[in-house]
Length: 295
Image 1 (cartoon, rainbow, N blue to C red):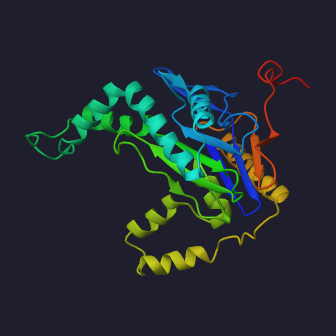
Image 2 (tube, rainbow, N blue to C red):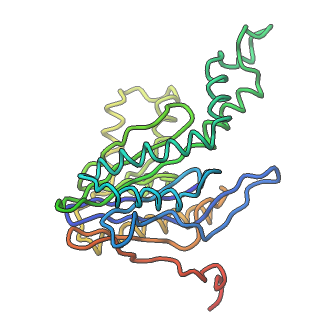
Image 3 (cartoon, rainbow, N blue to C red):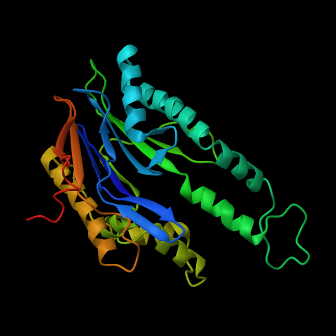
């Protein structure tokens, strides 16, 4: 799990992420706290990428695949950030579908069957068993990976960002543009939703499905929106502070909760401003894991 962030303004872009990588083993989850989830696309570049979800593929790490994208962009210069996002989708989907060929075929097979019904005796023809239902859920949850590609392409100077989400169910995705003047969070965004909006989607769903809410969905949304913290457009240094605070709040919330600590490690922050290329604000040194815990 991850907490990944993108703050998009007319001045530029802030990318933020934690450093924890989660490995699910038969004995339980295992964590490494010095993974990298933000990458500059090339050298002295005006483009960056942040990732969440599945941490890598058998045919190549995210670091390697981003480097190969950078080589391709250097060979054939893109005309827009959207083109970069489109090329990333084609580039990554080829690696994703090759690496997960067996899982894609199994997901396709299971998804075409009828859902498991514990009350059907005998079971309906072509319906999933209880184990197959659990297997489908695991496939759906374990092999999803997302990316936010952000920056600008010279001679343009307008900062832009696009979200792409890869999973076993939907084939190669189309990039979705992130509206200007706001922020997005992925991976484990519930803490931020509660902090900024006063609720998360789970609470909204629980209220609507409880049978005790007598109003309309629109009326509930209006009440919930009234509790949101107003967020004013911030200068870049304050946008950096906002992004860092949100990532840190998520890490601390999970640390002091009863949930698995799936976010943690050093916080990384990068910025791309309309007048300058990709720059690190906070970036782990190569000896970060060695010096962990040292005063």
